[in-house]
Length: 331
Ligand code: COA
Image (cartoon, rainbow, N blue to C red; front, top):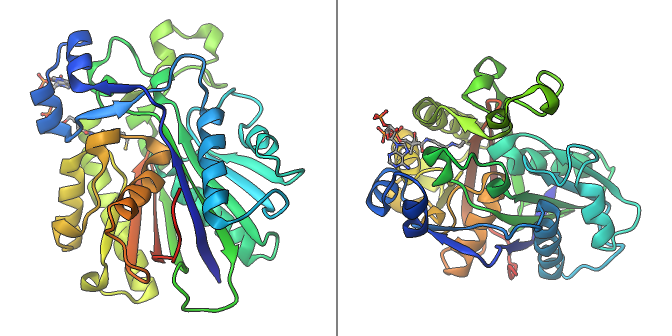
C-alpha cells in the first residue's frame, strides 16, 4: 500500500489583487469575483522560476514527513512552466534538495499534473522501485500569460505544493492512497494550449502572441465539470465509497462556479467542497496540494476523513485520487 506521510507548500510573497488587475485590463473586481470567485493571487517576482517554488515546497514536505537527504528515492515534478524547455526541472530540484542521484523527472498533464504525478509515484512504490517518492506540483503561470488577454490574466496564480508518498505495510492506516483514475481526450487538445515553442511550431517561427497560454474558457468550463465528475464517479465505484461517505471534495481550483457545479453533478453537498481559489487563483499543477494544505490549516480535516481529489486540464487530461487523511503536520 502507498500512504501520504508529508505535505508542504510555498506561495511567492507578491500578492496581485483584482484591483491591481482592473488597473491593467478592461475588467473589474466585481466581474472577476462574480464569474470566477477569485479575489487575489500570488505572482512570483521576475527572476523567480518554478524550480525555486518547487524546492521551497519540497523542503517543507520533507520536513512535514520528518525526512532528510537519503530518505527519498524519486522526485516527480508536475508542471506546465518548467525552468527550461530542456532539461526537465525535477533533477535540478532533487539536487538542490540534496537528495543525491535519485530518479527525477517532470510530468506534463497541465492542471491534472499533480494527480498524474501522484499516480506515477504510487506506481513506482507499488512496483517496488521506490520506498518514498517526493511528488511536487509547481507553477509560475505569470511567466506565460499574455499581457493583452484579460481572461487568462485574471485567473492564474503561482505557487507550489508537495507531498511525500511512502510504502506502507499496514493496510487501512490513515493516509492510505486507495486508488487513482486517469484519462485524456487529445481530440480536444486545442481548448488549452501554448501554440508555439514546441516542434509543431518552433518558437523561432511563431508570432510573439503564439508563445502565450491560450484557452477557450466556456468550453473548458463545460468539459471540466463532466470530466472531473465522471472520473471521480468511476473511482468511487472502483474503491467502494458511496458519495455520502466522501467527507471532503478537493476539486481543481479553476473557478468557484466549476466547483459548485461539480458538487451538484456528484450529488455531494457543496459545503464538503474545499475552496481556496479566492486567495490563490488557478495554480494549475499546484492547485490540489495547495487546497489540501489550506483545508488542513483551517482544521477541516480529521485523521481518517475520506478525501476525494479530482482535477482537469489541458490535453485534455483529467485525474482523480482518493485518500484517507493522514496524521501529519503540513508545513
Ligand atoms: N473581465 C471582464 N469580462 C471578461 C473577462 C474579464 N477578465 N474575461 C472574459 N470576459 C468576457 C468575455 O470577453 C466574454 O464577453 P462576450 O460575451 O462579450 O464575448 C464574457 O466575459 C464571457 O463570460 P461568461 O459569459 O461569464 O463566460 P463563462 O461563464 O464561461 O466564464 C471564464 C468565463 C473564463 C471565467 C470561465 O469560462 C472559466 O473559468 N473557464 C475555465 C477556465 C480555466 O480554469 N481554465 C484552466 C484550465 S483548468
